[in-house]
Structure formats: C-alpha cells, structure tokens
Length: 218
Ligand SMILES: [Zn+2]
Image (tube, rainbow, N blue to C red; front, side, top):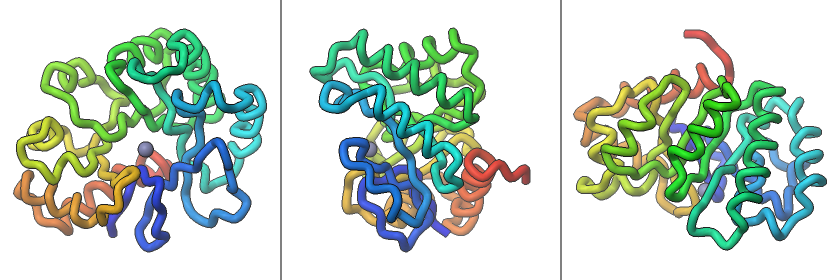
C-alpha cells in the first residue's frame, strides 16, 4: 500500500490526502481523505473569516484528516504579519479539534515551530515538500515534527535524500504534491536510498499514517 501524504492531483488509486483548493472547495463530492486550509498565497484573495468558519464546519467529517497546507512564506506577496495572523487562527482550530497540520514553509521553518511552541501546540506538524539542509533539519528535530518528502528524492544529491538517510523513519511520509509523478517512484527512490525493502518501507509509512491520522495505536 502506497500512501501519498499530500497531493493536488488525486488519483483515488492510492491512499492519499487530497489538498482541496480553498478558493473553490468542492468537498461535498469528494469521497476520499483530504486536507483543507488557508494557504498563505491565497489569504488576500478570499474572505478569511468565512473560510475559517467553513473549515470549522468540516471538522466533524472523518475524511478531513489535517489542516493544510498552511504556513508562512517569506517569498510570497501576502503581507507577512497577516500570514502569521491567519496561520495562528488555524493552529487554534487544530488544537480545538485535535487535527495535525500540513505545513507550507518557505524560509520560515523555525518561525513556524517557534510560534507553535509558544502556543504549546501538541498536534503533529508535518513539513511538506521537505528538502532542507542539515542545519534546518537539526533545528526541527523535536517530538511532534514530521517530514513529507517529495520528488526531490528522485535526485540522490538533494537535501531531501541526505536527510532521509539519517532520518527517524517514524517521522517520514512521501508525497507527489502538484507533480504528475507516480507516488510509487518516490517510494522506490527512498527504498534505494535507505537500502530497505519496498514492502518494509510501505509498512513503516502505513504505521506512521495510522498512528497520526487514524489514531490507531499499533
Ligand atoms: Zn502542495
């Protein structure tokens, strides 16, 4: 079983978390797992209060697995203080409803963790598309942090590949994000980098998924 932690292009063949576009959320018809959240890029294009209310209404839906992708982006046009404000509001919702976060971070990994630590945030925090250097990885080495690795793994010289080789595998997921790449290719690249059998790797990630998202204690 292959699990795609974060995708904008659902196939409905694999187990995947479809990241629904908050600008046109057609949730009623979507049958699988999904994430929903206000991405920093879209804050100024939507009615934030209306969307927060909408996210809260969805909370009781069992297929709504995580608030995301949300976060902070230093390269985005959106005013940074406003990004922080909207991020915190969503983190408060995540605390209230015990939901994990799927994080979009651009040059803000430490800012995000600092904000969450101040809030005593105790839910899982998954840094998606993680492809950071050893310094940032070391700074994020704290219980509750998880890392979803994407197509960067297809390049064995990437930060993501280096990170994976020494990572605690109970904190790892894989994703294809907005790429057409089959999630199996990312698993296979990871299996080679780690020198771990593909079946064993699938099992490990499945366990992580069940623990965090389905609250099954294994
Ligand atoms: Zn994405």
